[in-house]
Length: 124
Image 1 (cartoon, rainbow, N blue to C red):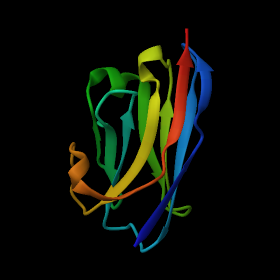
Image 2 (image 1 turned 135 degrees about the vertical axis):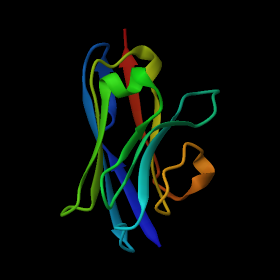
Image 3 (image 1 turned 180 degrees about the horizontal axis):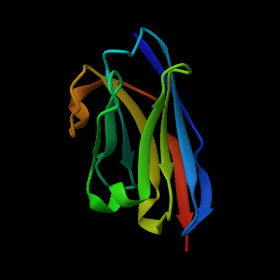
């Protein structure tokens, strides 16, 4: 079992920045892929970014995310991060951390472990 706890969400003005953290505990995640998803009200959960824990290989949802967000990990702290810059109102959502086997998946079904989510609200 892997437990994931997100933090770092909040209210920020458009153009601002936030850094989300996801602390992993329990089973080692060294062979896992870990990622961030988000879900806005009335919308389906969507992929944001992911990486493979062993080598840090990354995948982003699209160029808009890649240009503004950075996914990273601290191996010593067993913590996944999502640095979000130049935030836009359309980034408003609950952000979820997820962990799965060593393959990066864009689909949520590829991840078996989920955090409780952290709210990010971007105001105009």
